[in-house]
Image (cartoon, rainbow, N blue to C red; front, side, top):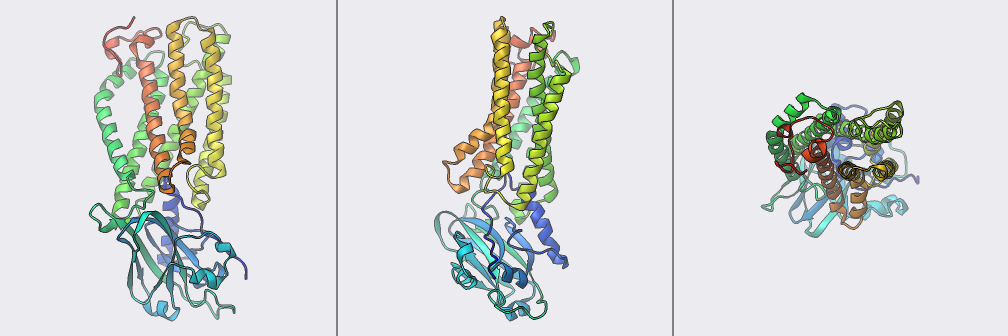
Length: 454
């Protein structure tokens, strides 16, 4: 037998949401003795993993791949609970911990089993293994093997499965092994906490005047509605992520529903913003060609601009959905790998180039200095929204493995939130908005100055 399968590469979360939680839900079905198999081709990246040890899976893949975890510092802990100790002893069950899985495909079964840095015999109901001290975060891979794993002959009958629960813990601030977050996730919970506070403070300050501006209407009412909806969806996604991370900090599992809803809210916000930005740019461009200058800066939707915006929105939506399925299969190293992710970043770069060309044509033909300033500020908000992800991914190449995902995740959230605020400030700024709206300056929130700048 020569069929082998290397454990998949590491991925955290920015996504630590949907994909990981879906896998945990599937594996937890093993508790109910369902037909779910825990093969090395369907691993989990969890911190508390429940399922079944299967001798047939371990024999087919030269070890049943369970999960991985980035340990850091000292006093890291792996705790394994076995629910049928006599069966585990009869099968000579053991856990194998590896620091490096490179070249696994070239190893024989016996060589793979004996190359483990740590071997844990599952002879008691609960086994606790301390991870050796390491100066920098390192990925430990966990596999299962038993007496049948390297057996040449066929297994007689169908061996029973051993139910298990594995918890992996890093040291907390006091040095005690109580932290469910691996090294690539450390700090995300605090980030979402601070972001929640920032959203709450901003909503208390700007929600009343913004509501008044929306009630009074005006030529930019549709734009303001879309921006408000996108901002609310972003805030909802942050809240759901915070709830998930809070639960995750306690049990290492989190809540699958909130993680999925957070991803859904973020996807809808992405689609809304893309449709609005494309519709505005293309609509303004077509409006200028028709020599209609009565309301040059308002949302001027046309069949052509709507069709183009819808086509690109559908393309981005398909790529986002594909990304979710790809995460569920665990094909990507981090948020910058995987075919769909690269296609998504290429689409955003192409859209930034397209918007730049459209806005350049508009600005070149514009005589009003105030309107040129308006278009240039609008371009800055667009570029920040579309280019933050590709730029951060390129920058993450220079970082360590456990820092990449956090930098991309935190950076994209902050940049896109800033982009929405920049567009808010632009469309509600008194110095530029005064030309296209009859709203009083008293009702305009987010203004940079209370005094006129004309």
